[in-house]
Amino acid sequence: MTKQYDVITLFPEMFDAIADSGVTRRALDEKVWALKCWNPRDFATDKYRTIDDRPFGGGPGMVMKAEPLNAAINAAIQRQQDLQLANFGNTAKVVYLTPQAKPITDAGIRQLAAEPGLIFLCGRYEGIDERLIEARVDLEISIGDYVLSGGELAAMVLIDAMVRLLPGVLNTAESATEDSFSPARNHLLDHSHYTRPEVWNNAAVPTELMSGNHAEIAKWRRKLALTRTLKRRPDLLDVTKLSKEDLKLLQEIQQKQK
Ligand code: SAM
Image (cartoon, rainbow, N blue to C red; front, side, top):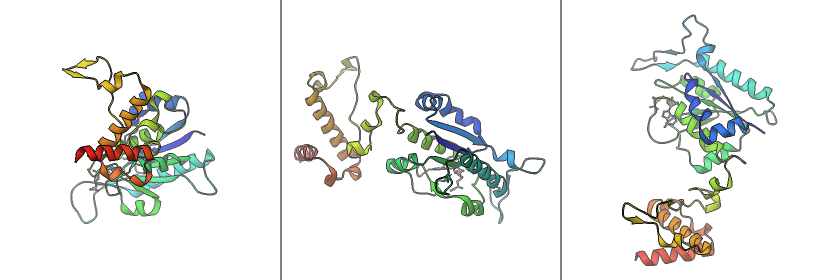
């Protein structure tokens, strides 16, 4: 079933970036996912189509008004319901992109990707009237501890990361199970990659990769993935989940480091 992603955004044209290029475009063409953008400006009722106003209490910047966003969310929910995505009475979750949530991880992306449909709410300016967030938002997600100008790039990051995990999107050569953080790889980082020429900038490709011995190459890659993870992201290493072979490799690596 096609995943349905609705996005509430003042800048729908930004989403051409994922609709028109690469893996996400191919998956969109193949109806693995569908995108519908809603501009809150189209739901503003005054003649200036106002979607923002000054903050109560003063201070710099503008705040997005609750009502146009509320109406846009209603339209998105209606669309999802019309597509019969409503599961036992549950409608698609409304996700607010915000720097104030816990940054999302690979596990979070996999959970989101399992949802049949999602509605992304992109803030701008100083953010959104808190009452709208309290009344309509199911989930708050950040893509990292830094502040973007708007939620659009964050929504696109989530959509890209989810879509590439969906069945049939990546071919075997690109398989997401080989990537960093994959549960199929025990959440390790990926090994390094090399291509022609064999020598570049006085650096040769590691001899192990040139041996033609597939078992040796697989072992070397595994060892490299473990070494990198140990060095760069030891927090990802869960020794209780490693296979016997990996544990042995890890011991070899740690022995060498002493
Ligand atoms: N005043 C807000 C604060 O300090 O928390 C920042 C507002 S920011 C300029 C405008 C919008 O960008 C936010 O409403 C949110 O939708 C989005 N945004 C900014 N940083 C983000 C992040 N790290 N992850 C997800 N969304 C983000």
